[in-house]
Figure 1 (cartoon, rainbow, N blue to C red):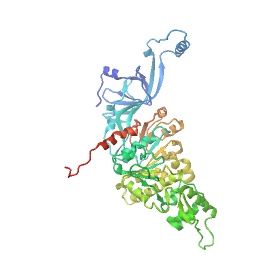
Figure 2: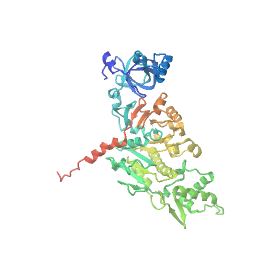
Figure 3: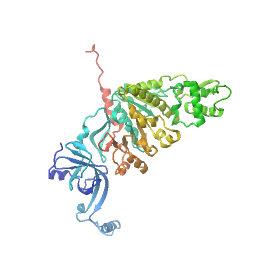
Figure 4: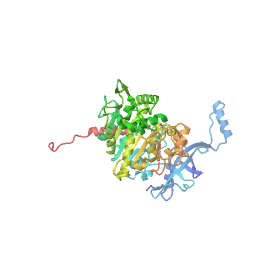
Length: 533
């Protein structure tokens, strides 16, 4: 229960006073020297111990001195036409008005959406951790995102979401470059390694999450829960698994929405797959003929076959030389990697974190690797649901960077839906969710954005992008355009169907967040055997 302040105590802690406004915009006169910031969380208390939490949306200069007099005084100072100009009772006559919005009302310790105005002429004070006790209740499978932030000030109250709820409902992380997207994902993955029965597939195009040459997930105390696949396992600290995928693991649908084929090429692929099944790619590369039933005429023209061979050479790095299939040393191969996809899916079903290093692959090859794994995983979970076994299986999350490459409007309109857009629309029914990272939200269809039920919004200077983010948010962020633009590195707003209000947070720097946990692990004494005792 929040202590009720008497008039003197209230006046001492007050940094402003409500002087007017309406439901969506409350005017607060700032107390001189209080330095209210954009995004500050303020508290307006009532006599019965209940209180309202307000957030500052804008700051405006006001003055009781007429504009013409202020202009004249400014001119006298700037042009050195007289002595220093002083206003009578300057603190009373010149001040700042904070425009705020009530984001939550606390009644008997329980948060409620605001349905009435705070009392007129009420003093407001800065928020304290005790005012946020309702956020400290224990939740199952807590995924830590950061600490509550008031303006630029960080509080001690931690913000968690239930990972088993949030991940299948999809998470979107929109921000421009340099605002801390990768740092946030690192912090989230670190925390997820402590949660049971949640598997995460991380498609890592920059090789930044494992921590090959720096602090990363490899340093986690539960590192046995981590699997790291990379095309280059040399000079990797810790355990790494060679990323090899056999051509027989690839099906025609894995190319959907990733590689553009003409109608003739699609028909050829279908014919080869029907005839040669899992060896269809090898036979296209070898140039095996597909003839009609009479065996008199080729069904695939040489030009079509030649184009497909070039495409598979560019994407897969597989070509024919002197009658043998050769690999350019990439991920795809003809003589290894038969169990790679099965092993990855088994690790995910065991609730492990699987990082796929795709930093050495070209764009289409990188997306194809993800499509093969995700497609096989989705098919398996569809089967589990049909058999009534789905609830026994772990929640699966898929981290995909530069999401518009597979979720963009143009990609879907030009090439049709792919496995990622399918999961964005239907994954929740099968306990599979996306953690989509993007700089350009406007490229993603609104139907998909609407399914991203948790958005962790970092700073964005582009007005059009902010408008799209605001339009698809789970809470009303119509007054937060300036706030989003002013978010500094590591500052964010969490808007989710699992939170009562859009929560401003400060995300810890990954290296600082894990420093104590790593040192604690290293300092643990060795376990003693019964013989030692």
